[in-house]
Image (tube, rainbow, N blue to C red):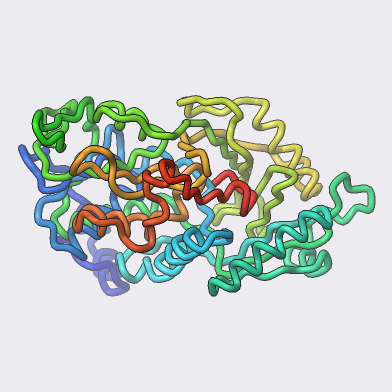
Length: 419
């Protein structure tokens, strides 16, 4: 078991040239059988394994990752955490995630660098402002710290916003969540991995799942076939984001999902200039400034299905145009990197969490562009569902069965977001 991080440990190891730190996590060989196998070594998979071991005492848990942990969407996002949703089920779930993020550094004994700088979403018309007020009212009824702001208040919060009278889409107001902010994505992965490893979870990297075996009579999952051999299991949790449909196909059923590329960009380092997350739905852009000084910028998903993890110039042009319209001072800033994550969208732009049609196989997918902010609550509720066999109360509305009953949670229409 690794030792706790502390000021005393930092001082003690500085005296020995930092040569005596324990490994953050082990690299074990996969065992022949586990009680639970989690497929996917991103934030959701690692958080689920952590809660299975900590909250339910599941003795043998493995996380299988085909590459390196955090190398998928968890390491390919814009790190924003917020809970400005409309429907009660969405609001309760995502605000629970914000609350868990607020205390996660202490819980994991790992600094996740949660910067609650607030998130400002500007409005460009009276109609958009009315829509934001409806969203704010719904959030406030659910106890979420969302509020409306005037155009003057928006510019006080972010003085570099475009204030030109000739602006194509003038800023007329906005909404603000003060508890929102950004988190260091790598730190979330490393913190959960270290904590899960301390509880005995096997984190197996470079272990691609190539097939799922089922019992001929009951249809229940019995083992997974991997690039490192067959691994027996009692239960399987699937948390592989954009590849969820691929894993479902291995198990013999289809999911109502489509996968798209969602691109992000980072600029050259700048001096501190943007101390809030700023977003515009009309311009299709959002931005924050990282601790290193680079602007982290994102936009909408590509309009066609794809499994590509690379960027393209049309998306870069659209995002850059929106950013310059929103904040003209950034017109001469140079972009350094461009990348994409593979995100999976359901028809109602809400996640699919809970039971699958296959006994002992559980689903954590359909996050679209909102998976990173959901990691703590996703891990907590998914672990409960796997351990007990019953959906956690917070995620009952997100079951796969909602597409049969048409009890959809359509946040794309209600909150005006792709997820």
